[in-house]
Image (cartoon, rainbow, N blue to C red; front, side, top):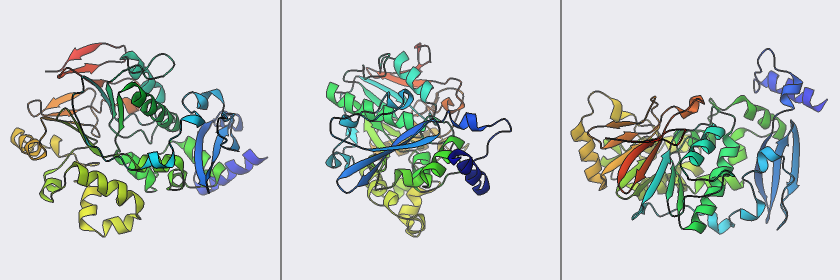
Length: 363
């Protein structure tokens, strides 16, 4: 009875738009979560199991009774203490021998896992196996696919395991992370519209500042440098540089202001509006315009003190090297769920990596 009522609510509100063959039985297959909500000094976990809402208060040393699909990467005893969710301030890293960068996975959890395993970042169980290497997730885990939450908890798990092994995971925010946090839900998978109805919360409230994942996401940077190679979801425009913004300024603006303010307040401040908008680091596409030349890329990199820049956001069928090997676009359409490529940097040499584990040298 409850499921029928929820389906009716979703249909009436336009939250759920099932295909003609969609049935109540299909909805019973939905599992999602867990989402963790701060309540005083404790955390309340809520998740969907077989189309039904479940919840439990986290107890030290005790696991949650999650279904197998949701428990693969979530461990209650591996959550960061509140102090560990403070904004990441380090944005330059050096002496890294191995880097794997992946971008715009958009809820394609199975492909994300397969790519990481194929190139030795994880083992068969999805645990960190990359030693002191660095994994860069270049934004846009959110939207489109139905494996967003699973992907978030995988990256969260690898982040902890990498630190213990002397490596590092860098999860950079993309425009779709920010869209979700700011309440722009145009691209969310319909699975999450059912979750919204069941939890009786808008999707962005599942990642609000009073949630664990919301605080974790707000601690993430937008732009970093590894071995004098810049990593940013869409790119750094000349307009951003003209305003004096560098990595630390950009990261601070998003972590401490943009993601903690209503959108109209962001738009009312010209400098924040610039960072948040089309010429900002989450939306910029200028590198792909005809009038953008090699000299422009050289100038931007010179201003940043970087040798190369790795970006995602703009989709192609394969990884591209542009402007004389200064700009690399690594959004290889993994979001379509059919394949794609990752970028590998080993001892200063760049390679593409396939889903089978094959490496090909980039020129």
